[in-house]
Image 1: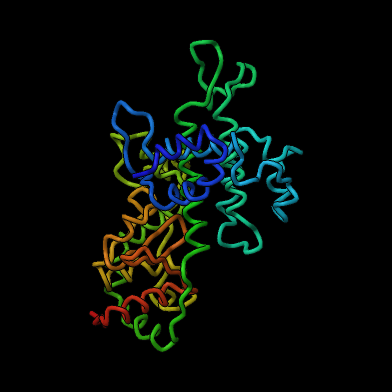
Image 2 (image 1 turned 180 degrees about the vertical axis):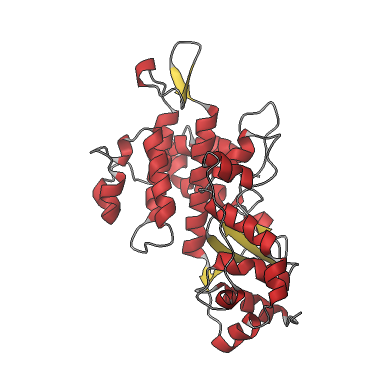
Length: 342
């Protein structure tokens, strides 16, 4: 359960906000279930409500003390998040979404960039924008709707899109920063790599297409589609075709000879590893990958968020490695299970 009573107290008391904001933010990132569907007569799920409340607290009290941060604090990102001379603190909602889209392209790839700080700035700016209404001439029809008093406020769909994207990116960044990096001896890695056969390659093609489609969807877009089309969502291919206006060419699996290499892309390898150890569940943003509780229901779980793959055990410990084969060898050595080739 998310601590809504504590969030409510923080929204009206600056001292409380400063004392608990960081903990509430981590609670939101690690414990709220973004994949949950709200009731038909409810606009937002608990994750989205809590996220908007946190954005408001950050906007009102600046409990993380980032309000006066200038674009210089963003280092090499300055020119990318300062659009036409507009600092991030003054961006409108669509510009904030553009920043989040840019973050997706660099997260996990730019070690000198404090992505967590940048995402916190975006969340604070969301809080600024959620707290105000605007006049008609300032409202973008696709993102704002009129109120009874003639003003305009952000639509439900716009809020859902922004909060979902921010939530997933914060989850990815948190796992990348805090997951334990492991290293397994080459001989052990090679032992499990050689177990992969032509059978595993053919049997895993359907799973590969599913995972590759998920990886091609922008971060948070599957959640947003799932929430927007509650009664229609049944496959992630709907999401990628919807957002690409039907113009999408799915990825093709690479040959087995290329898969059996530590340099092979994890997205190409994991479908075959699922064939080797099918009792390891795979979680995605729309099936609970963003909550520790869901990730710990099995002894070992694959967590796939966009193009990032993590390993999780039933004690909420997360692991990363230079090669997905190292993660798999780590699991197999831990359980003492040696697969047999078909």
